[in-house]
Amino acid sequence: TDRLSTSDVLADYMVAPTSMIMDMHMFGAMYGVSDKLTVMAMLPYVRNEMDHVTRMGEAFTTKTSGIGDVKLSSLFMLKRWGMHELDFNLGLSLPTGSIDEKDDTPAGNNQHLPYPMQLGSGTWDIIPGLTYLGHNDRLDWGAQAIYVWRLGENSNDYTLGNRFNLTGWVAKDWTRQWSTSFRAEAQWWDNIDGVDSKLPPMAPMMVPTADPDLRGGRRLDLLVGVSFAPASGWFEGQRFAAEIGAPVYQNLDGPQLETDWIATLGWQVVF
Image 1 (cartoon, rainbow, N blue to C red):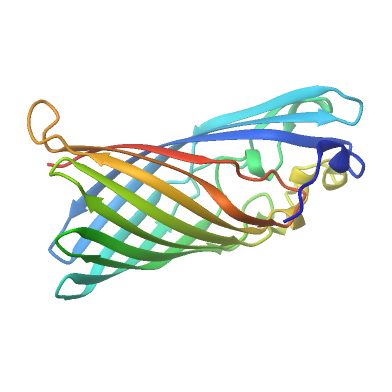
Image 2 (cartoon, rainbow, N blue to C red):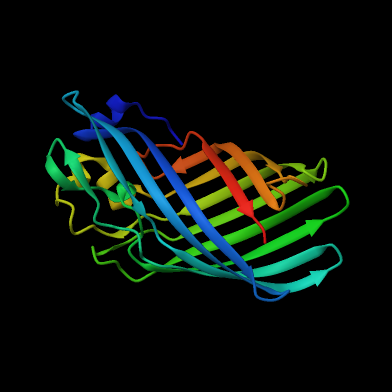
């Protein structure tokens, strides 16, 4: 939870990351097999950009982009009573995202990049969870617990840390078209098991992003959202949504770059 300056990090490492932007474009489809079962598929396109500075004062940037890990999942209704519902989630993450991304660095051209710049986990991951939903005439609310369980070791001899997400929300419909929401999300994730065999042996001592023991952490985010569903015209049957938030607590096995803010824009078509 302690803040460190770039000079603090450079006292122990030759290179310090200074900022990072991660964009993810998620394309998804959901199909209602029955009143109790829904299946989903999600295809992410990821873009990472990280700025660095060396102990000698040289600044440089690394970039990666491409398809991430495809996720297949299902949602099964366990119980419905009154205005409440309990669902079971079960997902599978496919290792479609690259773990062999490279870029130019002061160490040379076309260098294998550390863990945060890779596009996938490299492993098959099981994603179980529970979702609770409730509503009345004025409000909708719910909570969801999701666990990401990494299976085995990837082809570069490491396994990303398992992850647990717990989120709760409340939303209010102001009109048939407009609604707003408030959400809190807590996350826990473990350090990496193993070491990327394609990184130089000295890499963890050169830059903290290459150290598998400095990747775990915990975080609590608060987010607000707005949703608009046109009732007529060209966009009838579609929904547009936006959510923005920031952490109120972070405890990182660092030094790591903290998260400053998170924003999501969504467009959903129902047919």
